[in-house]
Length: 325
Image 1 (cartoon, rainbow, N blue to C red):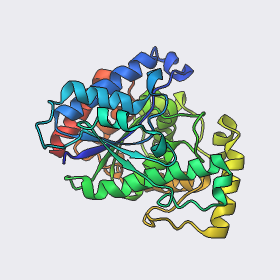
Image 2 (cartoon, rainbow, N blue to C red):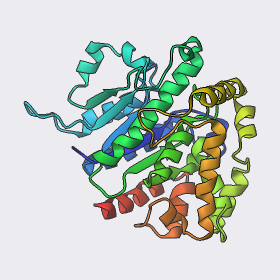
Image 3 (cartoon, one colour):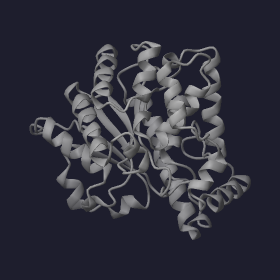
């Protein structure tokens, strides 16, 4: 199987992009170029998400599949080496039609996370929002474990771009949970923060802990000055207050045990604390080494994390992927 790159990306238009002369089309262009680069070098993409809003043009899975179909030669009879692996959470796994799944059989392998695998109990299902949030988390945690065995390189790789600041369905932004899971597992993490969104908040948190900051890092910190804490998350999306309280109560009563005990269920506060613990390591570890971007210099790693220049992002990714083999 092709070495997978875990994908934490979203498509959204917001004021942060407009401030640097960017918009949704620029995000689409960057995603398209990153996908093309990865596919041409023989990588595949792993995406923990749903097939919802397929016809609205903003479904990330659809973008990955259409780019794979354009770049990858059709499979010969009997071959099955998909370029996209989808960890599909319950209950969305029940809503994927056989016709649509069959349409992409040569390009996409769907790993359906069942209700039982999600660790759901009957009482939890009475709260639909809580049940779906736990199920989405289960898909992300299952993907993190799967990457350990599916990757042919020493450290699996994740690319994180944009990420919702509000309007998400979990306890915290999905990009935060996926990045924490990758860092805890020792995966390589590429944070493309120059295009705003939640990825920018994570980059801001990392750069803030660097003992010495380049001019580009200082400029980025001025642009994204909001701290990463639970209060800031609740200000952007107030309804997560109830959701996290419900999760905390559930964990108190039942614990965090799941089929993937290596990656326990975490509240928004747990996720922020876990990311802060990684940031604290910057006092004695270069940022490139911390994130597993060793083929790049520290200056190049900071540029990759902060630039909003699509060409610069692609050029630095080329250097990184070429040196990873």
